[in-house]
Length: 156
Image (tube, rainbow, N blue to C red; front, side, top):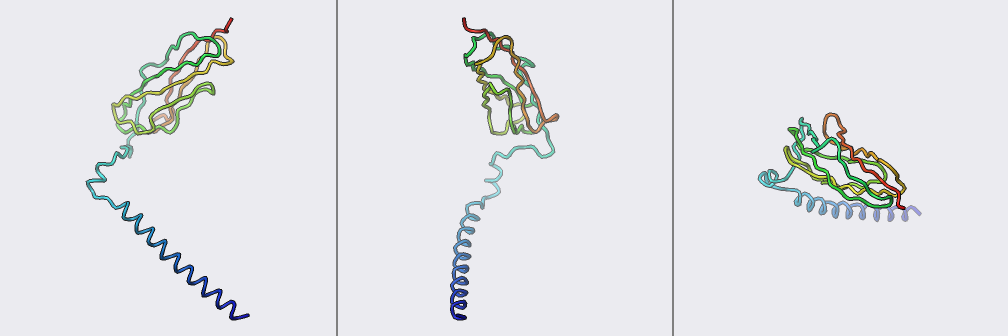
C-alpha cells in the first residue's frame, strides 16, 4: 500500500511540472504579444481622462419629434459635443423602456461632435409624451440629459 501512495505522488509531481512548463510557454508568448515599442504606445488611442472631465453639450435642451400614430416606430438622431478638456467616455445612455438607443462606444475627443440614434416605439401610448435621455459619463455632474417630445394619436 505505501508503494501505491509513492507512485501516485510521483505521477502528481510529474504532471504538475509538465503543467508549469506548458503554462510558462503560454505566458512567454503572451508577453511577446504585449511587448510594444514606445512609438507604438504613443500611436494607441488612449482616452485623455486623467484629471480631466468631459462636458456634454446637446445641440438643444429639447427635441420635438412631432406627431405619430399609436404603434408606429419613430427613428431620429440627436447630437451633442464634448466641450470639456478631457475625452468623453460614456458609460451608459438611458431613456424609457419604449426607447432603444445607440451611440459610439469610443472616447469622444474635446470639441468632437457625436450622435445618439433613437428608436421610439409608440405601442400602447396616447397623447403627449416626454422622454428623458440621460448620458452617464465622466462628467460633472455625472448625468447630463435632454428631452424629446412626441405626440401619439390613437389609430381610428
